[in-house]
Length: 582
Image (cartoon, rainbow, N blue to C red; front, top):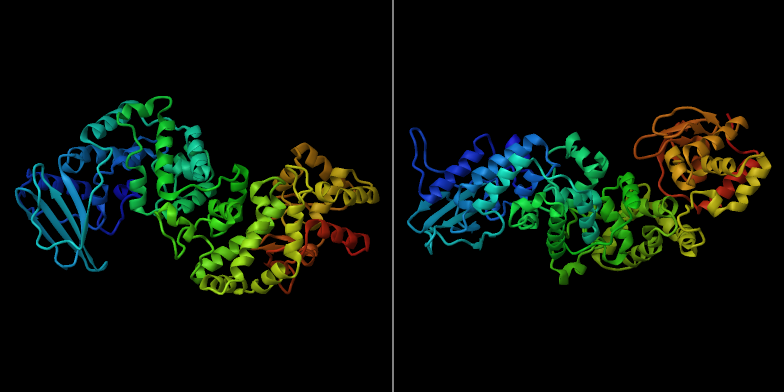
């Protein structure tokens, strides 16, 4: 439905939105103002519905920001403009009225009115509560209440007077949406620790939704942002810690008093500054990973959003609780924020999410991030924090321990953590003997003497020898990754590949999900996502388990040693005549 799609993330659907919803809101506004009388066939005004549109009172700024953003699809923009125009003509935008929301103990729906105001009660049997909404008319003091609310709060009064709303609607129709500003989104990301795509969603008035559709955005919206679908989906998951009320509160007052300032050159930057202040007040800040690191974390596809995975490494002791964790508490006062971290897991799903993230993140940080990357540098501290929590005697320790060893990978995870392998991997990171910006997955950086030996033995150039070692050992030596690890251009890569082909050390082929055209000779094992496909020969070398026929990868997660150790072992097998053969 176009109405609820346009307002997604700010109001709940609740089964109460339909084609007449906007007309119902306008009718309720006229009833509050005393200017409505039922026409032929019309009944009494219904209490405000369960779709929570009353939460918009005093906070239409979020919808106005979305309506003015270039990253809003045109059809939804028209719906939003119509809504804001309607809202501007109701008492809900008039600061002379006072509105309150609350809950009642009773189970009766009602509508009552007198000269001072109006009170509505709506009983929701499925939710087992009764919503309360009241409007105090200008000059009024107390509205007629059939019963006292259990609790009641005044609705926020911020940006969104009738004049501001009408002016914004007029400007959008005259000038079109505000041009998208990448720099403003970057500034918001840097000030808050949000990923750049998450900051962009927030600045576009689209800070997550809880999920009405996948993908979250259409092609037009993605093209405005310039991010891929997977990156934006990760950003939405990152923001899923926010509920509808959080989103409305965050963006309630970020627009300028004069909407025309939005179209000025520094208008988006000013909105970003106000949004950053609102975010940090409610949610604090997080360490900000390098952009390429965040994008690499997205490719891991862990249940923990990429931004939270990076935060887990950048600040292990105070890692933010990921969305949906049982102890999630947002907004959380700054003085209590340290009491709730990702390590405070208290249920099975949380423990599995955290364990999966840690054991996917550690080998990734070690082998797939460059020396000097702050996430890679912090990997040993993540291990220390994990061991510290597991050594406890409290509930989080027991739940997390169960999460580590629960599935068939569990015993292998525990062995990897305790048999010295993990210590050797973290020692490689702590040694800091790779040149800055170089990768452990590049054998020229981590085992240069071995590369020289391979080159001399096989009569290869250094580049071809390095590529051969990578194909022998690495689980996913895709062309894109090899070029990143080795800092190669496509031309340099192709030259090394041609050498290996000329020496009959590899074969050329196209295989699903491989991302490369060079393969070791011999059988091939397919892998169902997220498991990587690979040459069957290397599976036992890198700790992967195949099915009985040897043509499918059934399990793979952790390398059984450091890359220098394993590069050396792969070459030893080749020298011993036990290398890959057709």
